[in-house]
Each structure stands twice: as structure tokens, then as C-alpha cells.
Length: 402
Image (cartoon, rainbow, N blue to C red; front, side):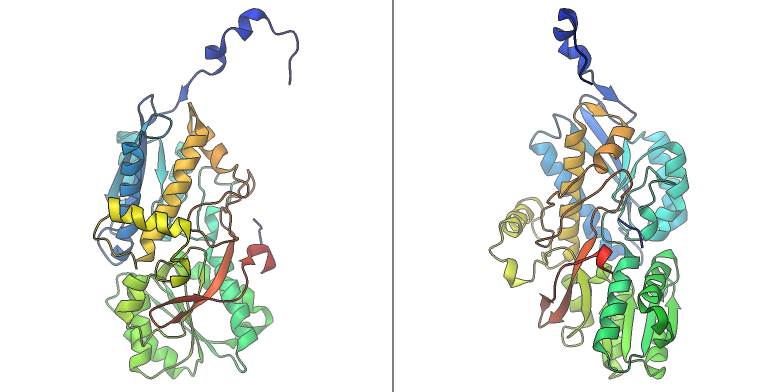
């Protein structure tokens, strides 16, 4: 797929005027004292499990501010609850861009919600940076130069599941559950591409709306289809329901779960640990419940940070790890802007990372971007749920290798 002059003869006057050469530059939302970032997050509604991300980002920036800010500037983080409703996202983002005069939008969550503002943000030339969705459309710098993703894209993730399933099942019959929107369809398209000539191995596709109370009827349909492989492309609430209902029906397919629903606290525990045994997913971040990271310096630093800045928060919720990691990348991006706090320079810096280590990424996974590559993270490793935690297996897989 996509991917993924030295001028001689300078006068003494010029040499004596470094202040002129290093003049500060600002766009709306940035000043000598402040950088204003906007965000929308579903603190309520069907995707409210992701509220932990927004709360972690807020705590992270407060800690940065307490330590002196970014190059002496405090981050003002405006995070609004859109309830995972695209029309609310549009209204709130317009207010932040045109009323609050934000410098950039950071980590707004959800494929349908970000899709609703995608063209608007690019028309306004306001960065829509490190969005909290893995849709492949966020890596299109030619047509949308003001939008960039963060996590591995859903399309590539689904290709990996397809190839693993084909290699490990004797007579694969694939049943697919996906959310009926761009997020779910991105996974489905990737799955079909990964299956290639074996796309006919898909025996049943069922969808659900984000607002549906349960997915019980969909799971019954998948079981009745004779599927022995379950591709579960669902957000946390539906993912947990799907795992639990499959167990209730004594349906035991090979179960692949999309990465956005890997939280032990928000998904696996509510689904029931016994019901979740053997579920496979792709990962790019360390999991706090995995004991192999107990002595890892980055994990120990994160755990201490959580104790200090988010006391009482559930460390088993992978969304806290995610929020911390993406906040670290955003802070570094702002640092690299120096005193040139223009929106164009922010995007330039975001597109200039080479083999950069973000805390809590799995070993061997680094951030790489360029003016033509807006996919910061392009590698994952498979993991399987065992006991009460995830267990990594296999090698790091890069997008190119799919």
C-alpha cells in the first residue's frame, strides 16, 4: 500500500544583530506565554471508555506546565465532550478555532468525528494533529497537509490479521463484526486486501451502530454462519459485549480484536477474563499489566508519574499509556518549534521525526515521519490474552512487510 547558503561577506552589523535573525513568530493561539491546544473527546456516550485518554493528556500538560512549560510557555488545553457525535464535534471545533482561537487541534478522538471536521481544518489551515483514530485517511499530506495521525493505521492492522488467520487456520471461515462507519469500513477493507484471492473465506459480515445498546444479535448471526474465525472490529463497549456473548453461546472461534479495544480494565475485565483467553490483537505500546515491563525504566517512570499526577486512576487501563505516549510526542513537537510558533512550522516539525523514541512504545518501534509520510507509527507486534494480561509473540511487523 502506501506507503509510509552560506553567504560570504556578512557585514559586522548583521553579525552583531542575532536578535533580528532569531525573531519570534506566532500564529493565533500562541504567544510569549501560552500555547492554546483544542481537543474533543467522548467523556460521555457510547465511546466514553476513551475518556481516560483526554484525562491523561490534561494531567500530562498540567505536569509540563508545573515544570515550566514548553520553552517557557504554558499549554492551555481545552478539551470538550462531544459524546462521539460528529455534529457536536463540528460545533465545538468551530468554536475553538474561530472563538477560542486555538493554535492547533490535538488528539481529537474518533474516525467519524474527525472525518466531520477534516476538510474544515484544512481549509482553515489549522493543524489537526496526532488524531486519536487509526483511519488510513489521516496520512494524506498531498490533499490534507494539516492533518496527521499517530497510531498504526487500521487498514494495515487488518491486513496483518488476515495474513495471520490464513497462515494458522486449516479451513478458515471468517465472520466479521464492525462498526457501521468509516472506522469499521477501514478495517473491513484492510481485511479484504489482506485476504486477496481468499476473500471468499469471509462467510458473514454484520454491522452495528455506535449507539446500539448491545451486539448480542450480531454475535448470534456470526455463530450461526459457521465461522471459525471472528474478526472483532469494535470499540471498547461492543468489543467486551462480543467477547462475553461468544462465550455465552459456547462459540469458540479464533478471535482477533482490533487494537483500539485492548484495555485490560475497560474491555477484557468487563468481558470476563475466562471468556477472553486466547484473543489476539496487534500492539505497539507496552501494557502495564504485562509483568515483563515491571523493571523497564520507561514503565517505572510512567507508573511513578501516574501515582503523582493521576492518583487513583486504574493503571490497567491501556488508555492511560496511550494518552501519556501521544502527549510526550506532542510536547516534543512543540519544543522543536522553538520560537517559531506558526502552524506551518508545527506541521513541519511533526513531519520531521526520524527514528524518534516515544516513551512506552514497544522496543524496536520508533516514530518516523517526513513531508510525504504522515504515518508516525508503522509497526506492530501481535499479542495474545493469557490469564489476566497480554502476552507478546512473534516479531515486530512493519507496514512495508504486509
